Length: 493
Image (cartoon, rainbow, N blue to C red; front, side, top):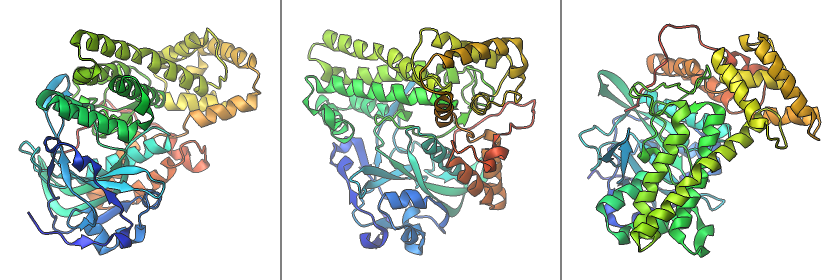
Protein backbone atom coordinates (compact mmCIF):
# COMPACT_ATOMS: atom_id res chain seq x y z
CA UNK A 1 0.00 0.00 0.00
CA UNK A 2 1.34 3.43 -0.97
CA UNK A 3 2.49 5.68 1.85
CA UNK A 4 0.41 8.86 2.16
CA UNK A 5 1.50 12.06 3.83
CA UNK A 6 -1.00 13.46 6.35
CA UNK A 7 -2.47 16.96 6.11
CA UNK A 8 -2.92 18.68 9.50
CA UNK A 9 -6.55 19.05 10.54
CA UNK A 10 -6.06 22.64 11.71
CA UNK A 11 -5.20 23.79 8.17
CA UNK A 12 -8.21 22.33 6.37
CA UNK A 13 -10.79 22.09 9.12
CA UNK A 14 -11.29 18.35 8.90
CA UNK A 15 -12.78 16.86 12.03
CA UNK A 16 -13.10 13.19 11.25
CA UNK A 17 -14.85 10.40 13.08
CA UNK A 18 -15.11 6.85 11.75
CA UNK A 19 -18.19 5.22 13.22
CA UNK A 20 -18.87 3.05 10.17
CA UNK A 21 -15.48 1.39 10.64
CA UNK A 22 -16.75 0.06 13.99
CA UNK A 23 -19.29 -2.15 12.21
CA UNK A 24 -18.43 -5.81 11.52
CA UNK A 25 -15.42 -6.25 9.25
CA UNK A 26 -17.52 -8.07 6.66
CA UNK A 27 -19.23 -4.75 5.85
CA UNK A 28 -16.13 -2.95 4.63
CA UNK A 29 -12.53 -3.28 3.54
CA UNK A 30 -9.71 -0.98 4.58
CA UNK A 31 -8.23 0.53 1.43
CA UNK A 32 -6.50 3.78 0.55
CA UNK A 33 -7.27 5.67 -2.66
CA UNK A 34 -4.89 4.93 -5.52
CA UNK A 35 -2.64 7.95 -6.11
CA UNK A 36 -3.03 9.84 -9.39
CA UNK A 37 -0.44 11.44 -11.60
CA UNK A 38 -1.22 15.16 -11.69
CA UNK A 39 -4.39 16.31 -9.90
CA UNK A 40 -5.93 19.64 -10.79
CA UNK A 41 -8.88 21.28 -9.03
CA UNK A 42 -11.74 21.94 -11.46
CA UNK A 43 -14.42 23.13 -9.08
CA UNK A 44 -14.83 23.54 -5.32
CA UNK A 45 -18.14 24.09 -3.59
CA UNK A 46 -16.93 26.83 -1.27
CA UNK A 47 -20.31 27.49 0.34
CA UNK A 48 -20.73 23.83 1.21
CA UNK A 49 -17.14 23.64 2.45
CA UNK A 50 -17.70 26.56 4.81
CA UNK A 51 -20.92 25.07 6.19
CA UNK A 52 -19.00 21.87 6.92
CA UNK A 53 -16.36 23.75 8.90
CA UNK A 54 -13.72 23.43 6.18
CA UNK A 55 -11.20 26.02 5.06
CA UNK A 56 -11.93 26.54 1.35
CA UNK A 57 -8.63 28.30 0.72
CA UNK A 58 -6.70 25.41 2.27
CA UNK A 59 -8.62 22.95 0.09
CA UNK A 60 -7.54 24.92 -2.98
CA UNK A 61 -3.89 24.72 -1.97
CA UNK A 62 -1.54 22.08 -3.33
CA UNK A 63 -1.97 19.96 -0.19
CA UNK A 64 -5.75 20.35 -0.29
CA UNK A 65 -6.00 19.25 -3.91
CA UNK A 66 -3.74 16.29 -3.15
CA UNK A 67 -6.27 15.22 -0.51
CA UNK A 68 -9.26 15.70 -2.86
CA UNK A 69 -7.43 13.47 -5.33
CA UNK A 70 -6.66 10.78 -2.76
CA UNK A 71 -2.90 11.31 -2.95
CA UNK A 72 -2.80 12.38 0.69
CA UNK A 73 -5.00 11.42 3.63
CA UNK A 74 -6.15 14.03 6.16
CA UNK A 75 -5.52 13.49 9.85
CA UNK A 76 -8.22 11.38 11.46
CA UNK A 77 -9.48 9.79 8.25
CA UNK A 78 -9.75 6.00 8.06
CA UNK A 79 -10.31 5.16 4.37
CA UNK A 80 -12.44 2.14 3.50
CA UNK A 81 -14.70 0.72 0.80
CA UNK A 82 -18.19 -0.40 1.74
CA UNK A 83 -19.71 -3.75 0.84
CA UNK A 84 -23.30 -4.01 -0.32
CA UNK A 85 -25.52 -5.92 -2.71
CA UNK A 86 -28.47 -4.91 -4.82
CA UNK A 87 -31.16 -5.73 -7.31
CA UNK A 88 -30.03 -4.24 -10.61
CA UNK A 89 -32.99 -4.09 -13.02
CA UNK A 90 -34.60 -6.78 -10.87
CA UNK A 91 -31.59 -9.13 -10.70
CA UNK A 92 -29.70 -9.63 -7.44
CA UNK A 93 -25.93 -9.10 -7.44
CA UNK A 94 -23.04 -8.81 -5.01
CA UNK A 95 -21.73 -5.25 -5.34
CA UNK A 96 -19.78 -2.77 -3.21
CA UNK A 97 -17.74 0.41 -3.62
CA UNK A 98 -15.86 -0.62 -6.74
CA UNK A 99 -14.51 2.85 -7.49
CA UNK A 100 -15.13 4.83 -4.32
CA UNK A 101 -13.41 5.19 -0.96
CA UNK A 102 -15.05 6.55 2.18
CA UNK A 103 -12.46 8.76 3.90
CA UNK A 104 -14.52 9.06 7.07
CA UNK A 105 -17.25 11.18 8.61
CA UNK A 106 -16.86 14.93 8.97
CA UNK A 107 -18.38 16.36 12.16
CA UNK A 108 -19.61 19.84 11.21
CA UNK A 109 -19.75 22.89 13.50
CA UNK A 110 -23.47 22.20 14.00
CA UNK A 111 -22.74 18.62 15.08
CA UNK A 112 -23.94 17.03 11.84
CA UNK A 113 -22.18 13.83 10.73
CA UNK A 114 -21.45 13.66 6.99
CA UNK A 115 -19.76 10.96 4.93
CA UNK A 116 -16.84 12.14 2.80
CA UNK A 117 -16.36 9.85 -0.18
CA UNK A 118 -13.92 10.02 -3.09
CA UNK A 119 -15.62 8.65 -6.22
CA UNK A 120 -13.31 7.46 -8.98
CA UNK A 121 -10.43 6.94 -6.58
CA UNK A 122 -9.18 3.56 -7.83
CA UNK A 123 -9.71 -0.16 -7.47
CA UNK A 124 -11.09 -1.79 -4.32
CA UNK A 125 -11.82 -5.41 -3.37
CA UNK A 126 -15.30 -4.86 -4.86
CA UNK A 127 -14.20 -3.59 -8.29
CA UNK A 128 -15.16 -6.82 -10.08
CA UNK A 129 -12.69 -6.28 -12.91
CA UNK A 130 -13.23 -2.55 -13.25
CA UNK A 131 -10.43 -0.01 -13.15
CA UNK A 132 -11.93 1.93 -10.25
CA UNK A 133 -11.70 5.22 -12.12
CA UNK A 134 -14.24 7.76 -13.35
CA UNK A 135 -14.42 10.12 -16.31
CA UNK A 136 -14.67 13.88 -16.02
CA UNK A 137 -18.06 14.25 -17.72
CA UNK A 138 -20.06 11.97 -15.39
CA UNK A 139 -18.43 13.48 -12.31
CA UNK A 140 -19.32 17.00 -13.44
CA UNK A 141 -22.85 15.81 -14.26
CA UNK A 142 -23.25 14.55 -10.69
CA UNK A 143 -21.91 17.84 -9.36
CA UNK A 144 -24.36 19.89 -11.45
CA UNK A 145 -27.45 17.76 -10.86
CA UNK A 146 -26.91 17.10 -7.16
CA UNK A 147 -26.38 20.79 -6.44
CA UNK A 148 -29.44 21.68 -8.51
CA UNK A 149 -31.47 19.13 -6.54
CA UNK A 150 -30.29 20.69 -3.29
CA UNK A 151 -31.38 24.14 -4.49
CA UNK A 152 -34.78 22.69 -5.45
CA UNK A 153 -35.23 21.51 -1.86
CA UNK A 154 -34.95 17.79 -2.66
CA UNK A 155 -32.98 15.63 -0.22
CA UNK A 156 -29.73 14.69 -1.91
CA UNK A 157 -26.09 13.86 -1.54
CA UNK A 158 -23.92 16.92 -2.22
CA UNK A 159 -20.80 17.56 -4.26
CA UNK A 160 -17.82 19.21 -2.60
CA UNK A 161 -15.27 19.14 -5.42
CA UNK A 162 -14.16 17.66 -8.72
CA UNK A 163 -10.49 17.23 -9.61
CA UNK A 164 -8.96 15.88 -12.79
CA UNK A 165 -6.32 13.21 -12.36
CA UNK A 166 -3.97 13.99 -15.22
CA UNK A 167 -4.63 10.48 -16.52
CA UNK A 168 -6.67 9.09 -19.41
CA UNK A 169 -9.15 6.29 -18.76
CA UNK A 170 -10.43 3.96 -21.44
CA UNK A 171 -14.16 3.91 -22.10
CA UNK A 172 -14.28 2.78 -25.75
CA UNK A 173 -12.40 6.05 -26.27
CA UNK A 174 -9.86 7.75 -24.03
CA UNK A 175 -11.44 10.20 -21.57
CA UNK A 176 -9.95 12.52 -18.97
CA UNK A 177 -10.06 10.94 -15.53
CA UNK A 178 -11.62 12.72 -12.55
CA UNK A 179 -12.53 12.25 -8.90
CA UNK A 180 -15.66 13.62 -7.24
CA UNK A 181 -15.77 14.34 -3.51
CA UNK A 182 -19.27 13.35 -2.47
CA UNK A 183 -20.90 14.40 0.80
CA UNK A 184 -23.78 12.36 2.21
CA UNK A 185 -25.76 11.89 5.39
CA UNK A 186 -24.46 8.34 4.99
CA UNK A 187 -23.95 5.74 2.29
CA UNK A 188 -26.19 3.16 3.96
CA UNK A 189 -28.30 1.62 1.21
CA UNK A 190 -31.14 -0.85 0.94
CA UNK A 191 -28.45 -2.98 -0.69
CA UNK A 192 -26.32 -2.77 2.46
CA UNK A 193 -29.04 -4.57 4.39
CA UNK A 194 -29.54 -7.04 1.54
CA UNK A 195 -25.84 -7.88 1.65
CA UNK A 196 -25.85 -8.67 5.36
CA UNK A 197 -29.16 -10.55 5.16
CA UNK A 198 -27.76 -12.77 2.40
CA UNK A 199 -24.18 -13.33 3.58
CA UNK A 200 -24.00 -12.17 7.18
CA UNK A 201 -25.34 -13.31 10.52
CA UNK A 202 -28.40 -12.09 12.40
CA UNK A 203 -26.06 -10.45 14.90
CA UNK A 204 -24.37 -8.51 12.07
CA UNK A 205 -27.78 -7.52 10.69
CA UNK A 206 -28.82 -6.28 14.12
CA UNK A 207 -25.57 -4.30 14.45
CA UNK A 208 -26.23 -2.62 11.08
CA UNK A 209 -29.85 -1.85 11.96
CA UNK A 210 -28.84 -0.43 15.34
CA UNK A 211 -26.25 1.73 13.60
CA UNK A 212 -28.86 3.05 11.14
CA UNK A 213 -31.23 3.81 14.00
CA UNK A 214 -28.61 5.69 15.96
CA UNK A 215 -27.30 7.62 12.98
CA UNK A 216 -30.52 8.56 11.19
CA UNK A 217 -33.46 7.91 13.49
CA UNK A 218 -32.40 8.51 17.12
CA UNK A 219 -35.96 9.51 18.00
CA UNK A 220 -37.04 5.87 17.55
CA UNK A 221 -35.03 4.79 20.59
CA UNK A 222 -38.08 4.14 22.76
CA UNK A 223 -40.27 2.32 20.22
CA UNK A 224 -41.72 -1.08 21.17
CA UNK A 225 -40.44 -2.70 17.96
CA UNK A 226 -37.29 -0.82 17.01
CA UNK A 227 -36.73 -2.55 13.70
CA UNK A 228 -40.32 -2.23 12.51
CA UNK A 229 -40.08 1.45 13.40
CA UNK A 230 -36.85 1.65 11.39
CA UNK A 231 -38.59 0.19 8.35
CA UNK A 232 -41.53 2.56 8.77
CA UNK A 233 -39.23 5.58 9.11
CA UNK A 234 -37.36 4.70 5.92
CA UNK A 235 -40.67 4.24 4.11
CA UNK A 236 -41.84 7.69 5.23
CA UNK A 237 -38.66 9.38 4.03
CA UNK A 238 -38.78 7.63 0.68
CA UNK A 239 -42.43 8.61 0.24
CA UNK A 240 -41.43 12.25 0.62
CA UNK A 241 -38.39 11.89 -1.64
CA UNK A 242 -40.13 10.15 -4.53
CA UNK A 243 -43.05 12.60 -4.37
CA UNK A 244 -40.56 15.46 -4.67
CA UNK A 245 -38.92 13.77 -7.67
CA UNK A 246 -42.29 13.51 -9.38
CA UNK A 247 -43.28 17.07 -8.53
CA UNK A 248 -40.11 18.42 -10.18
CA UNK A 249 -40.08 16.06 -13.16
CA UNK A 250 -36.86 14.32 -12.11
CA UNK A 251 -36.02 10.88 -13.48
CA UNK A 252 -33.33 8.99 -11.58
CA UNK A 253 -32.80 6.48 -14.36
CA UNK A 254 -31.37 3.57 -12.38
CA UNK A 255 -33.42 2.91 -9.24
CA UNK A 256 -31.62 -0.26 -8.25
CA UNK A 257 -31.84 -1.19 -4.57
CA UNK A 258 -28.19 -0.26 -4.10
CA UNK A 259 -29.15 3.25 -5.23
CA UNK A 260 -31.76 3.79 -2.51
CA UNK A 261 -30.32 5.44 0.60
CA UNK A 262 -31.70 4.68 4.05
CA UNK A 263 -31.31 8.37 4.91
CA UNK A 264 -33.89 9.39 2.30
CA UNK A 265 -31.37 11.25 0.13
CA UNK A 266 -31.13 10.99 -3.64
CA UNK A 267 -27.92 9.09 -4.36
CA UNK A 268 -25.90 7.96 -7.39
CA UNK A 269 -26.54 10.31 -10.28
CA UNK A 270 -25.86 8.20 -13.34
CA UNK A 271 -28.28 8.37 -16.30
CA UNK A 272 -30.49 10.90 -14.53
CA UNK A 273 -32.30 13.78 -16.27
CA UNK A 274 -35.23 16.15 -15.93
CA UNK A 275 -38.31 15.70 -18.08
CA UNK A 276 -39.15 18.33 -20.71
CA UNK A 277 -42.34 17.21 -22.45
CA UNK A 278 -44.74 15.71 -19.92
CA UNK A 279 -45.14 11.98 -20.47
CA UNK A 280 -45.22 9.35 -17.69
CA UNK A 281 -43.47 6.89 -20.02
CA UNK A 282 -40.40 9.11 -20.34
CA UNK A 283 -37.10 7.21 -20.17
CA UNK A 284 -33.67 8.73 -20.80
CA UNK A 285 -31.32 5.94 -19.73
CA UNK A 286 -29.73 4.07 -22.63
CA UNK A 287 -29.78 0.83 -20.65
CA UNK A 288 -33.45 0.99 -19.57
CA UNK A 289 -34.81 -0.53 -22.77
CA UNK A 290 -38.03 -1.79 -21.14
CA UNK A 291 -38.87 1.38 -19.22
CA UNK A 292 -38.56 -0.21 -15.79
CA UNK A 293 -37.39 3.09 -14.33
CA UNK A 294 -39.58 5.43 -16.40
CA UNK A 295 -40.88 8.60 -14.75
CA UNK A 296 -44.34 7.18 -14.11
CA UNK A 297 -42.94 3.95 -12.67
CA UNK A 298 -40.74 5.55 -10.02
CA UNK A 299 -43.30 5.34 -7.15
CA UNK A 300 -43.95 1.65 -7.93
CA UNK A 301 -40.24 0.85 -8.09
CA UNK A 302 -39.68 2.64 -4.78
CA UNK A 303 -42.30 0.41 -3.17
CA UNK A 304 -40.65 -2.67 -4.73
CA UNK A 305 -37.25 -1.63 -3.40
CA UNK A 306 -38.67 -1.02 0.06
CA UNK A 307 -40.18 -4.49 0.01
CA UNK A 308 -36.65 -5.82 -0.51
CA UNK A 309 -35.54 -3.87 2.58
CA UNK A 310 -38.43 -5.38 4.52
CA UNK A 311 -37.36 -8.87 3.43
CA UNK A 312 -33.84 -8.21 4.66
CA UNK A 313 -35.14 -7.07 8.04
CA UNK A 314 -37.48 -10.04 8.60
CA UNK A 315 -35.22 -11.80 11.16
CA UNK A 316 -35.33 -8.66 13.33
CA UNK A 317 -39.04 -7.87 13.02
CA UNK A 318 -40.31 -10.92 14.95
CA UNK A 319 -39.01 -14.29 16.12
CA UNK A 320 -41.94 -15.90 14.30
CA UNK A 321 -41.33 -15.68 10.55
CA UNK A 322 -45.03 -15.62 9.67
CA UNK A 323 -45.64 -12.76 12.07
CA UNK A 324 -42.56 -10.95 10.76
CA UNK A 325 -43.93 -11.17 7.21
CA UNK A 326 -47.28 -9.73 8.32
CA UNK A 327 -45.54 -6.81 10.03
CA UNK A 328 -43.42 -6.16 6.94
CA UNK A 329 -46.39 -6.34 4.59
CA UNK A 330 -48.34 -3.93 6.77
CA UNK A 331 -45.52 -1.39 6.71
CA UNK A 332 -44.98 -1.65 2.95
CA UNK A 333 -48.70 -1.30 2.27
CA UNK A 334 -48.54 2.19 3.79
CA UNK A 335 -46.10 3.49 1.19
CA UNK A 336 -48.66 4.08 -1.55
CA UNK A 337 -50.88 6.25 0.64
CA UNK A 338 -47.92 8.12 2.14
CA UNK A 339 -46.49 8.83 -1.31
CA UNK A 340 -49.86 9.90 -2.71
CA UNK A 341 -50.52 12.20 0.22
CA UNK A 342 -47.17 13.94 -0.26
CA UNK A 343 -47.62 14.18 -4.02
CA UNK A 344 -51.14 15.59 -3.74
CA UNK A 345 -50.03 18.16 -1.17
CA UNK A 346 -47.22 19.22 -3.47
CA UNK A 347 -49.48 19.45 -6.52
CA UNK A 348 -51.95 21.58 -4.59
CA UNK A 349 -49.08 23.94 -3.75
CA UNK A 350 -47.98 24.04 -7.39
CA UNK A 351 -51.49 25.23 -8.25
CA UNK A 352 -51.80 27.71 -5.37
CA UNK A 353 -54.21 25.68 -3.25
CA UNK A 354 -53.98 26.08 0.51
CA UNK A 355 -56.96 24.01 1.60
CA UNK A 356 -58.33 20.67 0.46
CA UNK A 357 -61.40 19.96 -1.66
CA UNK A 358 -62.64 16.60 -2.87
CA UNK A 359 -62.38 17.54 -6.56
CA UNK A 360 -58.76 18.69 -6.37
CA UNK A 361 -57.30 15.44 -7.59
CA UNK A 362 -59.47 15.30 -10.70
CA UNK A 363 -58.58 18.93 -11.45
CA UNK A 364 -54.88 18.06 -11.20
CA UNK A 365 -55.21 14.91 -13.28
CA UNK A 366 -57.16 16.75 -15.99
CA UNK A 367 -54.30 19.22 -16.33
CA UNK A 368 -51.71 16.44 -16.58
CA UNK A 369 -53.78 14.60 -19.20
CA UNK A 370 -53.94 17.78 -21.28
CA UNK A 371 -50.22 18.34 -20.88
CA UNK A 372 -49.52 14.85 -22.17
CA UNK A 373 -52.00 15.16 -25.04
CA UNK A 374 -50.56 18.44 -26.31
CA UNK A 375 -46.94 17.55 -25.45
CA UNK A 376 -46.61 20.52 -23.12
CA UNK A 377 -43.39 21.14 -21.25
CA UNK A 378 -43.79 20.12 -17.61
CA UNK A 379 -41.77 22.83 -15.87
CA UNK A 380 -42.72 25.67 -18.20
CA UNK A 381 -46.43 24.89 -17.96
CA UNK A 382 -46.43 25.43 -14.20
CA UNK A 383 -44.08 28.39 -14.60
CA UNK A 384 -46.52 30.01 -17.05
CA UNK A 385 -49.46 29.39 -14.73
CA UNK A 386 -47.47 30.96 -11.91
CA UNK A 387 -46.62 34.04 -13.97
CA UNK A 388 -50.06 34.17 -15.63
CA UNK A 389 -48.40 34.05 -19.04
CA UNK A 390 -50.93 31.91 -20.86
CA UNK A 391 -49.63 32.42 -24.40
CA UNK A 392 -46.46 30.37 -23.91
CA UNK A 393 -47.77 26.97 -24.94
CA UNK A 394 -50.06 25.39 -27.52
CA UNK A 395 -51.91 23.88 -24.57
CA UNK A 396 -53.17 27.29 -23.47
CA UNK A 397 -54.92 27.97 -26.78
CA UNK A 398 -57.24 24.99 -26.58
CA UNK A 399 -60.87 24.93 -25.55
CA UNK A 400 -60.06 22.16 -23.08
CA UNK A 401 -57.62 24.36 -21.26
CA UNK A 402 -59.98 27.33 -21.27
CA UNK A 403 -62.58 25.23 -19.47
CA UNK A 404 -60.00 23.85 -17.05
CA UNK A 405 -58.64 27.34 -16.35
CA UNK A 406 -62.11 28.60 -15.46
CA UNK A 407 -62.59 25.71 -13.00
CA UNK A 408 -59.16 26.34 -11.48
CA UNK A 409 -59.81 30.04 -10.93
CA UNK A 410 -63.16 29.20 -9.34
CA UNK A 411 -61.38 26.71 -7.07
CA UNK A 412 -58.90 29.36 -5.92
CA UNK A 413 -61.68 31.86 -5.28
CA UNK A 414 -63.26 29.52 -2.73
CA UNK A 415 -60.29 29.58 -0.34
CA UNK A 416 -59.76 32.22 2.31
CA UNK A 417 -56.24 33.17 1.25
CA UNK A 418 -55.98 36.12 -1.15
CA UNK A 419 -54.78 35.81 -4.73
CA UNK A 420 -51.39 37.25 -3.84
CA UNK A 421 -50.83 34.45 -1.33
CA UNK A 422 -51.71 31.81 -3.91
CA UNK A 423 -49.30 33.39 -6.34
CA UNK A 424 -46.51 33.34 -3.77
CA UNK A 425 -47.24 29.71 -2.91
CA UNK A 426 -46.93 28.85 -6.59
CA UNK A 427 -43.65 30.77 -6.93
CA UNK A 428 -42.28 28.86 -3.95
CA UNK A 429 -43.38 25.52 -5.43
CA UNK A 430 -42.68 25.86 -9.15
CA UNK A 431 -39.08 26.44 -10.19
CA UNK A 432 -38.47 28.95 -12.94
CA UNK A 433 -35.62 26.76 -14.15
CA UNK A 434 -34.36 23.21 -13.92
CA UNK A 435 -31.09 21.74 -15.21
CA UNK A 436 -32.32 21.38 -18.78
CA UNK A 437 -30.69 18.42 -20.44
CA UNK A 438 -29.36 20.37 -23.41
CA UNK A 439 -27.87 22.99 -21.07
CA UNK A 440 -26.15 20.31 -18.99
CA UNK A 441 -24.76 18.69 -22.13
CA UNK A 442 -23.57 22.08 -23.37
CA UNK A 443 -21.66 22.62 -20.13
CA UNK A 444 -20.15 19.13 -20.16
CA UNK A 445 -19.09 19.40 -23.79
CA UNK A 446 -17.31 22.71 -23.16
CA UNK A 447 -15.56 21.24 -20.13
CA UNK A 448 -14.50 17.95 -21.72
CA UNK A 449 -13.57 19.14 -25.18
CA UNK A 450 -12.24 22.66 -24.61
CA UNK A 451 -11.43 22.71 -20.89
CA UNK A 452 -13.83 25.64 -20.71
CA UNK A 453 -15.58 25.56 -17.34
CA UNK A 454 -17.25 28.97 -17.64
CA UNK A 455 -20.37 27.46 -19.24
CA UNK A 456 -20.79 25.14 -16.26
CA UNK A 457 -20.12 27.94 -13.78
CA UNK A 458 -22.83 30.13 -15.31
CA UNK A 459 -25.26 27.20 -15.29
CA UNK A 460 -24.52 26.44 -11.65
CA UNK A 461 -25.04 30.09 -10.76
CA UNK A 462 -28.55 30.31 -12.23
CA UNK A 463 -29.50 26.88 -10.87
CA UNK A 464 -28.55 27.92 -7.34
CA UNK A 465 -31.76 30.00 -7.03
CA UNK A 466 -34.38 28.11 -9.06
CA UNK A 467 -37.33 30.00 -7.55
CA UNK A 468 -35.90 33.48 -8.12
CA UNK A 469 -37.74 34.14 -11.41
CA UNK A 470 -34.94 36.54 -12.34
CA UNK A 471 -34.32 37.96 -15.83
CA UNK A 472 -30.93 36.21 -15.88
CA UNK A 473 -32.72 32.86 -15.87
CA UNK A 474 -34.86 33.48 -18.95
CA UNK A 475 -32.40 32.00 -21.45
CA UNK A 476 -32.25 28.82 -19.37
CA UNK A 477 -36.01 28.21 -19.63
CA UNK A 478 -35.96 27.63 -23.39
CA UNK A 479 -36.44 24.16 -24.81
CA UNK A 480 -33.90 22.35 -26.98
CA UNK A 481 -34.16 22.53 -30.75
CA UNK A 482 -36.39 19.83 -32.27
CA UNK A 483 -34.58 16.59 -32.95
CA UNK A 484 -35.47 13.28 -34.54
CA UNK A 485 -33.22 11.50 -32.03
CA UNK A 486 -34.48 11.02 -28.48
CA UNK A 487 -32.25 12.34 -25.71
CA UNK A 488 -30.25 9.55 -24.09
CA UNK A 489 -28.17 9.42 -20.92
CA UNK A 490 -25.54 6.87 -19.96
CA UNK A 491 -24.29 5.36 -16.72
CA UNK A 492 -21.06 7.17 -15.95
CA UNK A 493 -18.14 4.85 -15.36
